[in-house]
Amino acid sequence: MSQQWSIESLFRALQESEFGRTGHVSFQIHEGVEPVLLIEMHELGDLPMHLVATGGEVHVSATLCHASQVKDRNAFNDACLRLNTIYPLSNIGITTVDDEDVYIVFGQLSSLAPLPNVIEEIIVLGHNTIQAASELTTHLH
Image 1 (cartoon, helix red, strand yellow):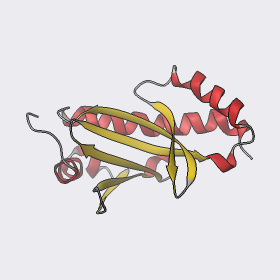
Image 2 (cartoon, one colour):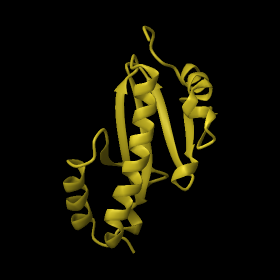
Image 3 (cartoon, rainbow, N blue to C red):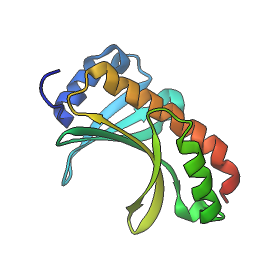
């Protein structure tokens, strides 16, 4: 691809791809201040993910858990940092949603990346989110 991806062009390309036609994933554009592509990974228990394409990057994320679910934030943060090194293409971070800290798994790639790379990012991030949630479950209420 020689042009940068937009939400609309990614939506069309993903829906038309073999990945989008499998029935294992669905896509929906959510219009807001900034359009977001909502992704639902059916083969991963309907895991919701968000994709944003702005400037020079495509950012994909999924919620890991809400901070209010964590027993000991210091121990959880330590565990998250240790997991960060073993999950390819994904990172764990904290963002704020409705005045609450939320742990997310996220990844980015260039907005010039070819479609197979974007698809790989979505798939790997989904699997990494499920694995991280499984490994971190002992830290949750």
